[in-house]
Image (cartoon, helix red, strand yellow):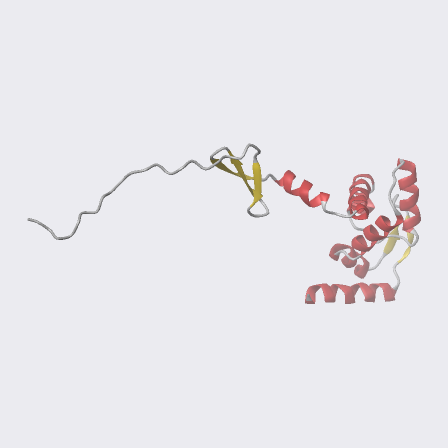
Length: 163
């Protein structure tokens, strides 16, 4: 039983140890998963919703952060705002007075962004298209909704539905 072929030799050697970094390294895999290296171990950790929101909020502009804070305050304070009732003309002056009474530092640009986003929301446009009365922040009546404003709201709703 002699073979002309030499036998293959199998050797078992340990792999060399990788050099572990002293500092923990973080690598973003997805938006919601982070990978940490601790010594020779790799730890995959899911981010909580609060962590995701904090990261996202830190990337916003100053006026956008102010606008969101003002939106939260107005929704907590005024039911007209929360229910997206049609707002009276000149409501921006009422919002400015509210900001001053609360002692807040919110830019005019943030107020404009907030009003634009609020008045272009689908439920607000539906309330305007229905017609009726406009309201101030405190709930007092502030005039009627004109027919051309109702038509504009209907066109804006149609544009939202088409997109």
